[in-house]
Every structure is written in structure tokens, then in C-alpha cells.
Image (cartoon, rainbow, N blue to C red; front, side, top):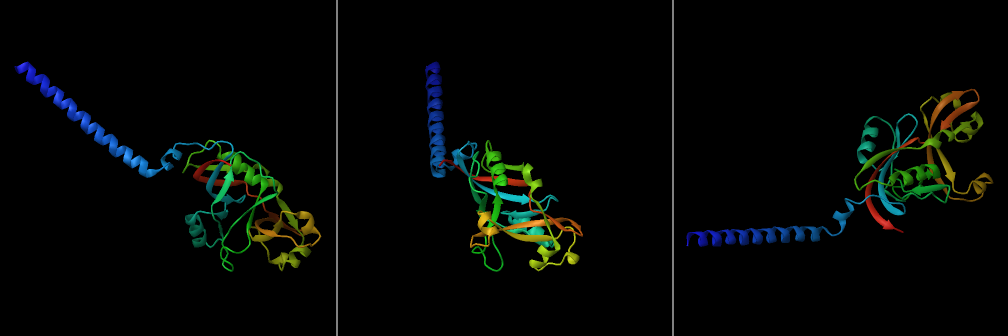
Length: 231
């Protein structure tokens, strides 16, 4: 009898363990179902053709942020007395070169809020970001190098500066200039009506011939906010 009772007691414990296990599994399944499909994307990596929503910050050659979606970077720059443009998050198709010369993004200006001029991300910058996202996970951060930025330096003559209300004698290295750019340079060159976008450059050198203004951004920090399947 003693042996039989021990067996019955062991079986009862196993049944209890199975019931507890089933209850725990039920709770886990309820939690997962409540999370929807979002928990799956936490383990997914960006593949070519996926659409990624990203936070980003573009930096000039001096390592200064120019445009960002990061409120902390914006506040830190404001505290230091440096202007930084705040932008909305952008959607990028991974591993896909941009067909147009530039990619316009919404930015905030004190005069027009979010309805003002858009900022221009040039094709090499967009492409570097697009190709760099491949293999990243949601919430992963990464710094991307933009090698072609060195070719985006322009010499602004004293006459050109004066046309834009700036005197060469008043300028110094590190000053920031704003330029309007177009996705249709031919129309812009002939002064025809065309949509223009904002671009910010830093003065890197000043000579009697004018000011060298660097409009290239050699680095970008990105963070993947969300990933969606291919278009």
C-alpha cells in the first residue's frame, strides 16, 4: 500500500506541474498576442527593399550637427549657442539608390513652423544611409560615412556674397551660410520658376578671392525606428 500511495502522490505532483505549466504558457500567449506583430520586428534585420523609418543626424566636416531628429542634440546645440535644424523622421528604402538629385525632408523653422522650406538631402547622402541600413535591427544605432562630401565645397566670390547681403570682410571661418538648391538645376540657372530646398554650409577658408563654403556632410548617425516589408 505504501508504494502505491507514493506512486499516486508522484502522479498528482506531475499533474499539478502540468496544470501550472499550461497556465504559464496561456499567460505568455496572451501577452504575446496583446503585443501584436511588433515583437517579431524587434528580431528582424533590414533587408534590401525594406522600408525603414529612421532618426538621423547629419554632421559637417567639423563634427557639428547640422540637421537632426534628436531633441537632445537640438537642445545641447541651442545651449552652446549653435543653430541646428530639427527634422521629422524619414522613411528610407534600404539598399536602393535615389533616382532624383535630392531627397526633401520636413524641417521646423521659427517663421513657418513645419510648413516652411524643406531641407535637401543629396543623393550621395541618401544612398549612403540607404545602403548602411541593411542588416540593422530596430533601435540599433550606427554611424555612416559619406565619402563624396568632399566634392561639395564652393567658392563664393565677394560679388556673390554681396548679392546675398553678406560682406566678405565681415566673415570668419566657421560662419554658416544658407543656400537654396533645386532638383532641376537647369531651370534654377535660367531663373525660371522652380521649387528650391534649403542647404546649410560652413565657411572653411577665406581669401581675397572669396569664401570657401563646405556644403557636404561627411557623417550621419542613424537609428532604426521601425521596419516594414518591401514596397
